[in-house]
Length: 111
Image (cartoon, rainbow, N blue to C red):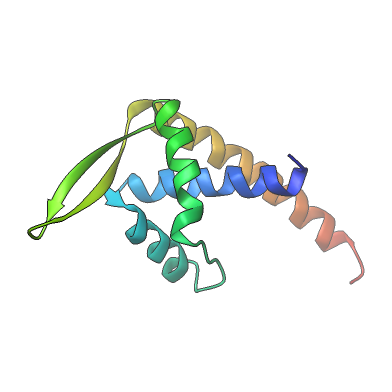
């Protein structure tokens, strides 16, 4: 996995965990929130989220629960676990370090 893919994966994990901090959510809802809160500059198809959900669940950072919606439709809601809160703090700290470093380089450049 290249640096760019690794950065995207880490960013997606961070965004999912951050959104779950305010309460349980389902995949489509998370996809829509990333788009709307990211001023539509970030767009993540719902299907791209599931590999990240599965990995976070495997790491016990999140848990999932199926809930019946209507008569026959079920949704999988994801819940932030204590390990996920710890991981979120680490990811945010790492993001801020990288973001500040990039800003420093860009501000010193003549673009």
